[in-house]
Image: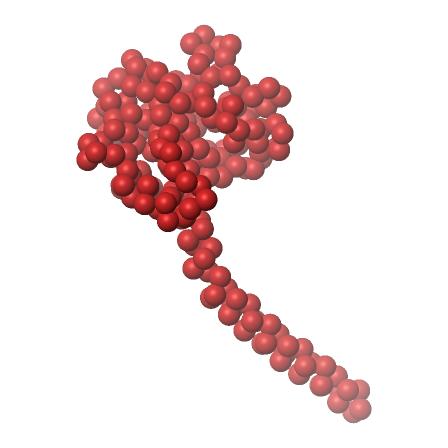
Length: 202
């Protein structure tokens, strides 16, 4: 009987402690959730501005928002976000969401394409789990800059091709051939679908 009594107090204590901790976690989540959401939105704006090669002040959140709103409109394509570059009211390009498998997980991002579908404007990644120093180098400027102003006029598929393959126009990342191939494949697949759906003539 005494053993049962001795166990009651610890059990009650643990229940009360669990309730208190749950309440604290819920409260912290409620307080931080809007800020996390705002930071996530801001980070996406920066990536889209990068895709379109639009200058902005990275140290001023309000400037980022203002620059984004002055130049970009958000739309939807195939159930996913589509960003339209309209700096002067006329459509000059699109930031198309692309995603697919990588070596260690999924790779997602946005590829910019001109309104006439003849050139790529840029690329930025929103998610990737590739090996740091190897496949993770797709995030580096040296790799991403290759997509800036890339001529794809006349192509109806295989817009980007890893060198030294025939027609190659992108340098694969040294030591990360598989990741480079995954990126090229997902860009080509999603861009081809987008152009076809938008009625682009290549």
